[in-house]
Amino acid sequence: MERGDIVALQLEEQVVLFCVLGFYQKADSDETMVILAMIDPEQLLHIPLCNLQNTDVSSSRWLN
Image 1 (cartoon, one colour):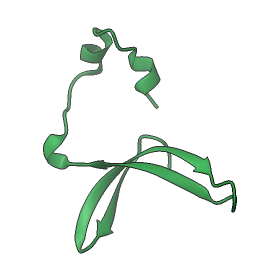
Image 2: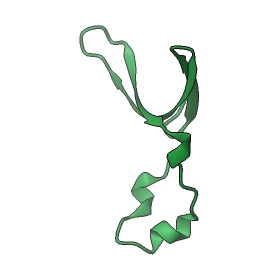
Image 3: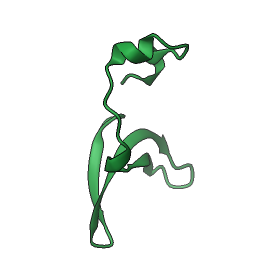
């Protein structure tokens, strides 16, 4: 599993999509924790990367 991966998990009889944002080590147990963002398929945007590159936001820091 890597940052940026999309995973589907079943929660309460419903499949929910998540994006992996990052990882960290839990200090008290050395267990690896995953930071996830829930994705609403109805709210997804698909736009060309060049459209983001023409804004004031640096796209390089958002790429995997």
